[in-house]
Structure formats: C-alpha cells, structure tokens
Length: 215
Image (tube, rainbow, N blue to C red; front, top):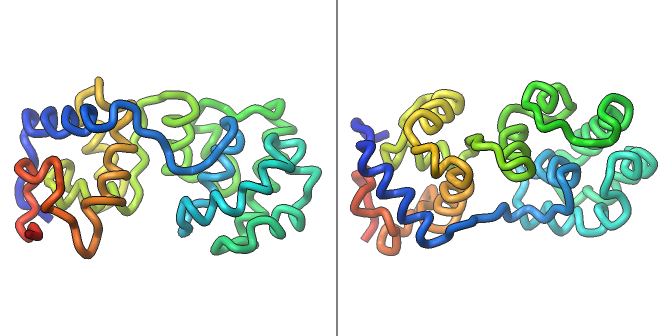
C-alpha cells in the first residue's frame, strides 16, 4: 500500500485521461433492462462476466422480467446457470428476489439502495452497480480490482472495502463519478492486473505511486 495519497491535481489528471480514452465506458455484463442487469450482477459474484453472459443468453431469452423468472421456477433457473459457481444458492436468490419484486414492487427494480439491499443476494456492491448502470447514479461499487487499484495507485488507500469506497467518493471530482466505477474496473482488469501489471502501457504511470512498477 502506498504511504501517500495522490494529490487532488493528480486525481483530476488521472480521470481526465481515462475520460479522453473512453468517454462512456460500459459494463461487460450483457443485460436488457434494470431487472436483467440486477440478475446478472447477482450471478457475477465469484464468476467472470464472460461466464455469466454465456449462461444468461438463454436464460434472459426465456425470462427477462420478474414474473417470467418466477414462472421458470428455481429448478429452471438452476438448469440455465449451472455452469456458474455457487449456482444452487444463486438460483435460490434469483427466484426469491424475482418473487419479491413481483409482490412488493410491481415487477420493477427500485432505484433505491435500501430497497435493493433487502433483496436476497444483493449487497452494497451489487446495489451500487445497479444504481450506477441502470439509474445513472454516481455510486462507487468496490470490487477486487478497484480495491487493489485504490491502494496501489494511492488513489484512496484503505484497509476495508467500505473505507476505500468512502475515500473514492470523497476524492474523485463529482464530474467523473458517473463513469469512475467502470474506468477503474476496466483499468484493473486489462492493464493494472494483480500479479503482472502492464505498467509499460499504463496511461497514468507517471501519476501512480506504486513502487514496484514493471518495465
């Protein structure tokens, strides 16, 4: 973990470069509407986006709204997602949250963190992703990539996910918050990798406080 934090000026420059390179980054999860996004994010826990997309292609063709998912049943959901890790528990959660959305929310996904976090399988990170992607709210979902980057770059060092989230929200300029989550995820996924960061092609190398940069 860097012993110092990036300056406000450096953070402004860092996100300006991300914005210039990719003005409107998108999630790599395939979805059709807020509901299918919610399901995809729930399924993505401890799974790759590519693996989730492969499983949901046929699932969403059959059920892209809560009532259809409930009609499919837990067993039907399980059959479509059995290639994903923890599929038994995830099938139960997807069925249960779909039923709740039908019974309590008229089949719509609430654009409210507290309501989302009451749904089975939905924690703070999942709620943040849904609020950001589906409802354009300036939330910050901290996954393993963002946690690593925040500490490695000196962007918002912290020992817990929540500490990093709060630090990022406090330090990233408001005008960048809509897309900051995806810029950081994509940077961590394809350039600032955990074991072998590709510092040689990093657009923010000169700003980064990581001491063990690769050639």
